[in-house]
Image (cartoon, rainbow, N blue to C red; front, side, top):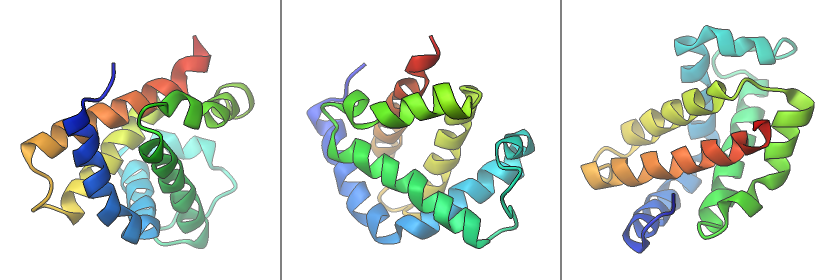
Length: 142
């Protein structure tokens, strides 16, 4: 699956806005993930998972930074996220379904923050993009 030029333009356009609020968006997406899918908390036994905690903010920043790496490499998302894919598959051994859950939470967070920009076409492009990101992050599991 690859992104069309139009989809890439939509993603980069919205990313310009997301990146200015990256830390808050990453934190909110993780808070949404843990509230909606409490089973995902098992991978963070050493974290303070209360909303707005310093550890959630730091990890949320890392999540959005990785998405930013993918946005800057839309023609080579697999290359941009290769190291992260290996880390999650071989070291952290995160259940692959969690990437889909986090992608959905990130999609909802971005849509809620930028409702005027998140048209049906934007939703489709971002959903496709985040599906590619999730697929790349789970590729090493196969």
